[in-house]
Length: 343
Image: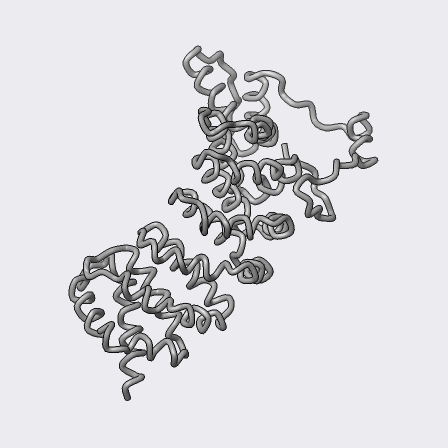
């Protein structure tokens, strides 16, 4: 059952209560009559058969009693399609309202299960918006501040999924201080999975959102994220390089800032001759950084890095392997830029 649409957005974490419209009250009082709904399984089947009668072959419909096995199967299937999603979300929100009370020594399973249940639904944009309208955002800060890393990671993932391609949720998160909180998590949290989920959340909030990205930059987010590369962890490398390449496409001027932060030497040091999927994101970011930027090109050409020789050897390792076709394309583009700079 969807939450009624509101014409004006409320950017508070907990929106104001909805006011019932005159039309809504009239409907409840019976002024607008709805078709009588089937009240039993047999009634539902009859309703469906009558509704599709015009599409059937020209013969009379026959109703027969179902055996118990078929009846049970159909009942379970119908239940799966008739879950009240908002009601289910509200149940999980009520559980998570107490998440602040959990101590470090307590079992977090009940709360982490509630987060997982919410995640099953909120990848749908309308459901994500409903999650805010029923007060779901009030549990986000308590989750990302929990003493339990599993709950902190879950809270960050909630933020990521809620904001993915969703301007409504992005704006609420921007307006309520989540971006600097996530930057602090990336910088200070000792749990790798929590930090990776925080990066995931930052990526979702800033995606195609210039305001969010500028807020991220104003809180030294770029420096913090670049520093994650020095942790030499594949999860960090994959998330960070993908995110930084996206930022460069949104604001091309960031290429110079990343070069000034010594991003290029760090990226080159992370490359490996062994075919590795994190290499693809490193090459993709290097391609972005050297695109029309002479300073970046000159850094890549420094003899101590021997980057051209590395790329040739690496291409030999991935040659004739379709799995690394995109990596090979990035390598060719890098070589083209480096060779063009020598002519």
